[in-house]
Image 1 (cartoon, rainbow over the protein chains, first blue to last red):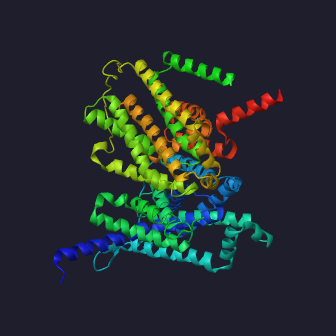
Image 2: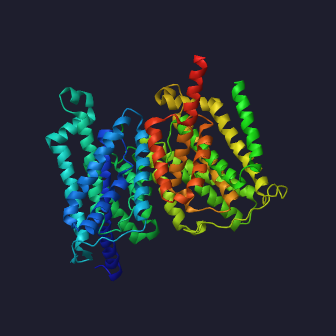
Image 3: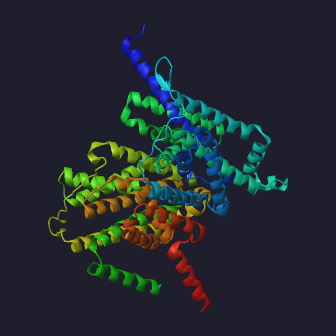
Length: 294
Length: 310
């Protein structure tokens, strides 16, 4: 039989990995969005963290200024921020696809600075709280978890699987994948590829905003909430490789859990463990766990 | 060629006279950033590798300098050496991993490593965490022969360090080694098929660039007498990219011009607070959309067109 210490340790590992799943949910949605955008636009969207922040902010503003509840914001906020993404794509991103990938990276980095700077200037960088829309908690046996956090994990899974289904199993998704493979040929079949690209960017941005809305009741809503997150998500993307949607989902959740477990074993390493995994993956499988070398 | 030489001579005279016209600490800071930007540009402009994590070398070297001088009470020369060595070592480890991927992945990997180093710097005790290392005493250089308490004297020391670093980069680029680097940048497969081990060249260039960025960071710590988290942050990595981009990638003088422009701008805009971010971001956007050659690149293009027309 297990002694009390071992049971306690197992308990702690189980509860920290469960909590890690919540972080993992955000890694999964965000890295999936990056992968979808990169597949179609060949641009690493550095603005992703800022757009995640905008999603949370939009929800917070709707609640405090217009009294629009969380559940409506969950739909409205990604729509608004996604539209903003569409405008960005039409105005700026569209003009640099023919250039080296680095320019897209630099452009979106600049845009992130502008957006985060403007939000900091208007609302400061200290956060504002967002009340949790679901109260109460669930007893999992080994731990007690706030219902809302459980909801986030389930919602993230549903969002991820829906995106996967949309891209891998529907006709529109088929066009999208074909256009990623060979845009000229798909255009020759009479499909409006530039519009498809715009839509893809809008979708990716809306996903980031959706993650932001989900995060609002857990984190403080602040102008800098996405700044560090996007850097960690870059590491997640390097680890998973950007080849497959399912790959991003699995890597995102997996790394979140790993981060949680590290909190039990060696707490100071919990915010660097993902980067260490990245170094190991680069040594062993440089293309990423689910990536193909291009 | 004679025109270029005259320009270089004029700049040198200006550099020698300037501490009598401008605030020396401002000039020294600008020179440190200029060297930092040149080191970054060695990689991007001549090897085609965009490191988005160069702040880790700049910042860690500052901490190394501070620790060696403050905690161990060693002379500043050893501090500078420790900064360069620390940065080069870090460059060897992260570089060996990062060059396993190319293009945009390379940028993301260096960015991620820099973030890891940032988190480590927040946590380990010898960096002073959020406070950083404050009050690193300025000690005389060269066995007490050069008193560095006077800002103007220190300025000439910093100018000498800058010229050393700049000269080193100039030599690298114009050596056979530099030619191979450019060949790898333009067509890696071809360089490999000609028998050059591209990865070894890339790694060496990465370590050199890291070491020189370290020299810049350690010198900055010597001048300003502190080392803080700002210098290892992702924001600093972005700033050096901006400097090189504003001045002009792939021109040897461009990053120097860019560094002076950005440092001057920050000096004047310090009172605007968060708006500095907005302005920096806008400059990124404008340059990527319209002036991808940077200031020096655009001017030299106009000059060439004017020459061939007249």
